[in-house]
Image (cartoon, rainbow, N blue to C red; front, side, top):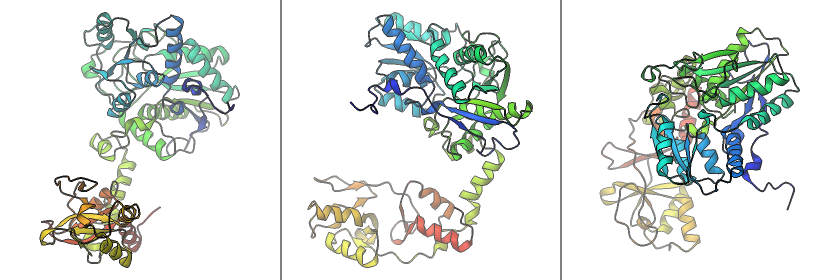
Length: 485
């Protein structure tokens, strides 16, 4: 076998890149030293928890626990994803705020038993994940409870490896490490391992505003709410040893999410907890008056791809007031102001050329070829728009003899309205979005985020009046001299 081939997925865990973040918008400006990001989201399971899962699996094996034994796993979801990726059978205990992206990924990995737990439940309460997990283990023979927070697993070697990577990648020069704190394991073990080699290094702990870890107290969870996942607790976790953190920095949800979006824009595809850590690293760097040769490393422990419905959704970010003022202004310009209240009527589209559903496939293809169209609207009774046919699909069907030249277009078109299915590939259904000449171009732009072509009709959707594509929008903006790459 080639030496380039790695036999198991666990062998790809670790040795993640360390990159400069100083050129990311909003990170390095005004900072004397260099801020470096340890891209833990580039592990195969897209989080730092891959390292933890690898060592837990090794310890399970050493204890003689069967590989088929169900693991009851508590946490925000990344550890469960990592363990499932390594082939373990799981029962997952996930907080209510865990994103749907992680839940979908867990299901795709074969995890069917998912129990939602109360956000911020205090230790000892019946609603706390630990108590729920113990009850499940009690009634599930052969199952094993996995919870980093309890400190039942020796993770020292796991974080010793990470600390060694950081020192090696920094050539032994590292002034501070900034990391989000949740269970306390990473903070405790990394602090111990790094200070053994670099006694003067500062360990900066990051938690959301309203988290109580740094206060070393137990707080009312109902009064301690935040959106940022993977960091923060309503109490101090017992795995966090006193003295592990030299400085605490709390970061608001808006700052965390806005910084995460800036990281994504800069090509660093990290999640909100990483955004909080990078924002805290900048705060630390400014307050510490670093020298030009100083280095601050930040753990970027999670991927932005876990947050398609939240962090990566403009609508969600706006609804939760998580974009800073400049981002809001940029979004408004992109979505609304660049069109200056223009509507589809301002595109000056040519009149639509249509085919009837009873026209032949040969005729439809000839029509599109004649007019250099990539698609053509299809009309039914009383010339009402009922769907469309694309040139590429029609040619493929004809070339492969799936469709005959004399077959009616209606047999192979994409229909907007549900219709009874017949045999073969007929009656493919397509969701219809009403677009009229009065539709604002800002709305049309959003339509093109998930569609390639828009069919413009009257308000009653009786007649197809024109066809618009993204290119029509680009041409419109070019005419207005407001188009930007």
